[in-house]
Length: 111
Length: 113
Image (cartoon, rainbow over all chains, first blue to last red; front, top):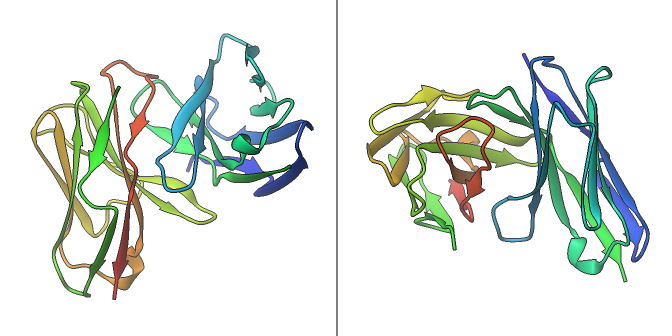
């Protein structure tokens, strides 16, 4: 069946450095790619999303890139801060109700 | 502020018990979802509902059922809890159109002993 692979599972960076999380998806019909951040004790929260007609999207320190040919997309966080420490999930949706989530990346930002 | 509220943060139940997990949203969303979150497996969809009294199976519906009698409330039912259903359960809701942002509750950590 369809799946989304996410790497790495754990990422540790120094405050101020950049962090990159990568995902690949299998369903070529996917056209919606949200990213969620889950802080300790909370549910996931959408931080940015990208649709298949866009190759890149940026929101302050966060950017996402999409390569539909290769079926992969990435999250880039620049100038990381301790409050960026969380679990990040990528997901791929086909425009209906079904969204497939990656396994998650636990990001640690060391002060 | 948008809100999805799950009735319990932590729950401990015995094997064989019938378990109800309740979720309420105040955003008048059409769609509601139940996910299960396990380490290394991400979020897996159990069931979803796109309207009152409507339900669709997700990827792992076995051992679960759902009920949606009112638009704002979506219940997950474990008919006979088993230890392999020990997990974090997340409820979410979204607007009716496709590719809409999902809003999640804070989660219910269920332990079946």
